[in-house]
Image (tube, rainbow, N blue to C red; front, side, top):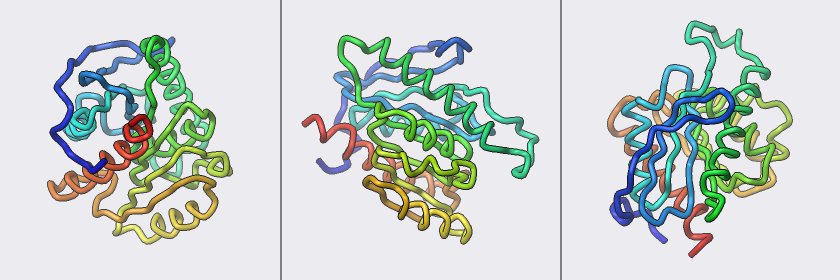
Length: 222
């Protein structure tokens, strides 16, 4: 089924609270959705971000519900060398809570679940997907792969890596990572893959991510 933005009927948006920490979130559900994508944003973003809302709308338009959560993320002032695996695991635990919450809400008609992550959120999304078979697809934008350790070997969900084409170190690390993952993967290079502030970058990442989720979250139920 080809990528097509205007197929699904509009649905509704709800403000909800997730898990024991009561994390604030937006649940956007198009009519007859059979899948849901949980967002794991970077530390300088939130559920209110226009960037995230734009991505969510694109996923909604191909019949995929979205859950945008304000995760208890890292200190915005923290330097890269101050972030460790424990921080990523902490965020991944919150994503696991979101998956459990989704299953409890949609228990009469379970949804396929995907994860979209950017920056440190992408690292946490990969850790989460490596911990549970409940995740059916992942899109990772500029993940810090050095903070994931050996967990990539346990990843089973088809994963799209979107990497900043101006970061040679991330490009090489991503190539090496793909060789270690025992499932379907793809690697795309895009300018500003994490911040993606330019209009062309946003459109490219949106198209790549929506097509990946449509392929693995909707066609499998066709």
